[in-house]
Figure 1 (cartoon, rainbow, N blue to C red):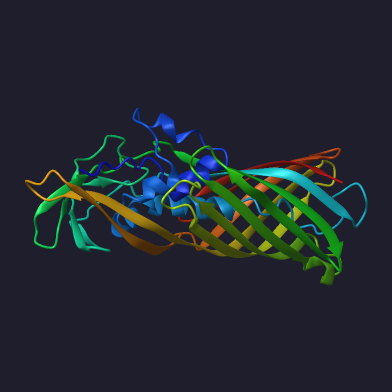
Figure 2 (figure 1 turned 180 degrees about the vertical axis):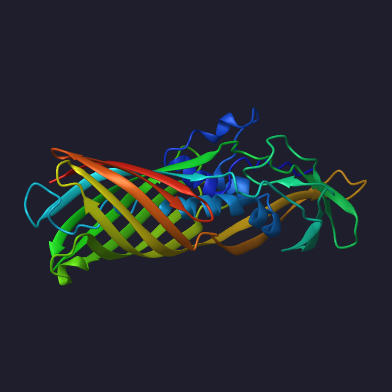
Length: 343
């Protein structure tokens, strides 16, 4: 019999790695490492199950990219800026899909094709019911039952999926500055490792408009996230390769008598993931006590639902400390806050 201990899937791991509460709180049974969790899930089930996390992760990574449209002049040294801080984001999950239906799927393996038949009922996504659904049945090419799979429950019952990212900004050169987001490859207990890199380049538009009453700028961003299984896992290499880009137009206005700046913007964005792992199932023939293990290479792609967002926020600068908060309207509405030192 094949028992699925799939407590974690790629994007839940990404959120957990970047300051989400430990997923072991969701259920009492043991948590498997990342590679082992994926090894028991078929492509179609994993695709449906993880889509809400892909949406939330894409919404979060493309949030908190700016705090003002002013390029140069916000630091204590005129024209030269240096910003070091942390951006915290939270994608609201109220509109996320919590359940799906799937009758079954075929999984080609080294020894033939296995068919998994699922219960005729709603199956939870990661944001769905935390009670485990009934097991799915594994059939061989002759339609004979040779095992079963324990289906994963929902893992996150939360109104907001949070994320936190360190970032460094510097400028300006000809009215242009840059911002880097970076998380070196970091091992997370037995679950594997995660790494993140992002680069934003922004250019001032208001510098070309004499006596402009507001600051205007445009910005382009590219980000990449990678997740790998632990060294002793069947999926020890890279399991998830995620990347995305965003283009935005920014506007801001500072209050003359107070260190307060109101800002907003429109942004077009895309975020997608490539998932690749090895499926492994232990099966036995009816009436035969001997078991065998079969494997299959599984891969699929997902795109986050967010494409366009509109946001508005406010930032406050106290000496060298800058605080900001904003709210974005999109497929997944997102709240973002930041704190940093500006010089």
